[in-house]
Length: 54
Image (cartoon, rainbow, N blue to C red; front, side):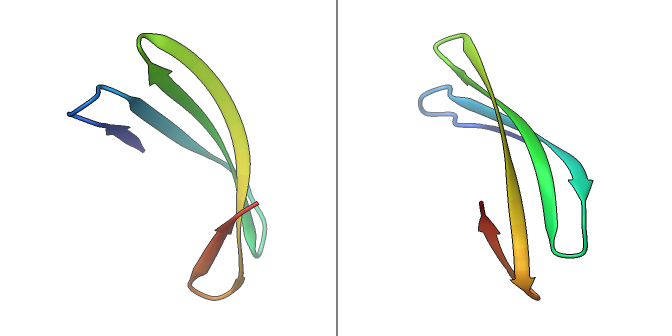
């Protein structure tokens, strides 16, 4: 997924990673003023339909 804020030029790129029954990891990159920063995380849905960032 890619998102670019047209007002301030900040960009976010997300790539899905491994998944289990209730969770999925992701890798991301933000671009602020031309500087890239990498991050990773996990989202989980313990109850169907509601996702939470861990």
